[in-house]
Image (spheres, rainbow, N blue to C red):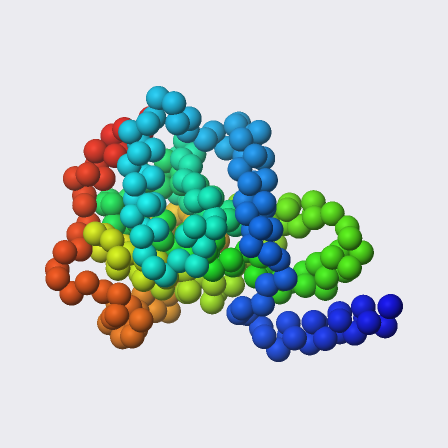
Amino acid sequence: MKTIQINILVFTTLWLTACGDRGVNFFSVDDDKSFGEELVKSLEADPVNYPVLQRQGNEKAYLYIETMMNDILKSDQFKFKDRFDWEVHIINQDVLNAFAAPGGKLYFYTGLIKYLDNAASLAGVMGHEMAHADLRHSTQQMTKVYGFDILMSIILGQNAGEMTNIAKDLALGLGTLKFSRDNEYDADRYSMYYLAATKYDPRGIGSFFEKMIDNSEGSSTPAWLSTHPSDDKRLQNIADTYTKDDEFKKLFKGDGSYGLYKEEYDAFKNLLP
Ligand SMILES: [Zn+2]
């Protein structure tokens, strides 16, 4: 029995090394969901650090941001549209950040929402965060970094508490584990694929980065940029997706119907505390 286990471990380690960044994931889809649910619970239990805006009394603001999320979910590019319980939360704090927990739990700080100029930019960031969840980047990265430990704990039947904490720290940008550059580029690209099915200009994620980069010179690094490195390659990739990507071309509605929706966005911002 021991030999079989060791063989599995050796094989898996080699397999992980060979596969590198993409694809391999030892966690189940239900693991993603339960990591996300645990994160929601732990943020709710910590209102000092994470003052989540209550739905009661803020129904109109939540209706706006949930409608946006549901519009984006209409894209046929999602794998887990129906299996994940997609949720969006607003954190009432002047922080330039947003994040997604595994399983489709999204968080946006009011600082970021107020900083953005139009609905297409918020939809672009939202698409990016939704892509991290739908492409299961968290558990993929955890497999890559902790593959051996995960297999050991599966074989030995240990509980998953430690992994839950790692998933939480990854979402919040607290631990050493981060999304890879390829994860980031893929999330940008998928944001554009998703938005192609909506009314929002699919370049929203690009305009957001440009604004962040312009405004970050000389000042401290905004929270989002510390977990989302922005460089010329990133902007170039976004531009290339728009002009050269065959999948994007198939999804793009060539009828001039995309917009930025600044007015409705200003009205949304005015609803926030
Ligand atoms: Zn990201």
